[in-house]
Image 1: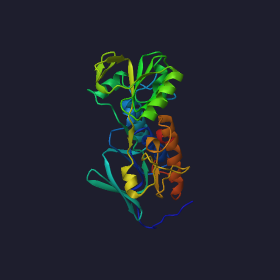
Image 2: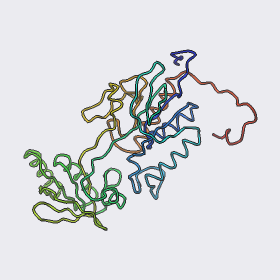
Image 3: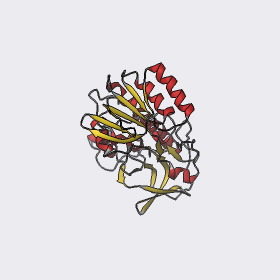
Image 4: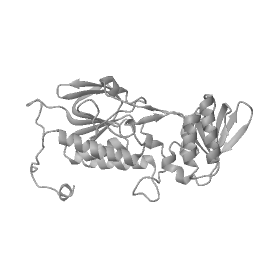
Length: 322
């Protein structure tokens, strides 16, 4: 059990959570139920919001859209007293009581900070990629939705070395898989060719001129003048880790920018925790929620005990059942 570092002084919050996706909102739910004061500052760019319908999330047999899931999580976290604000965190600075977090012209002093900022996928250049995502023709995660491919004509678009691995995974779900890999060095092309023969994957090394969304798929036009139509296209163009504010503090990360954490989700900066896609590992909502349970519990245990005190006046039945 840890004692207060600065007796008589009080921070604004026990914990500020940066990011309102599944990881951040689950952490807020846990901390609020631990009767810790917590605030979620959300920039509104959760990767989960792009999911038209996930059938890979436990407990929803018909599936659930990313936005519906986020709405349920927000309602649940608020119901236990977590505060949620829209805003973008610009800076986190060390403070005697923990951290000063600046966002949208204001700041809060938080004893602990949780980063659940996620990643930003690199999308291909095309008209309205978000609409193609919503229709299910442009997809970002074969682990999440590969099962629904079910024999469709699928393309993986990106550098040969990365795209061929994704294509081999998708062969589990279709016998019509194509890798579109413009550019790249010869060793990567040779390795892709070898794997393509093994997995019966078609390869296109032509440079792409245009990706055109259709009502029932995506058309790929190459600079050689050929046109190819696919039911589904998976871009494999990389992603940006939203770890800048942590790296500015000196938090350790890997070569991709993913934050390195210990078994309790704490970064190399004491009191700074990280969850979900911004951490190295499998990019899945179920994994992010496991991180949140681990990290939020660690935050609670890192603070001094907060013994329960009876409320003044009558206690409602609703509060007894929480």
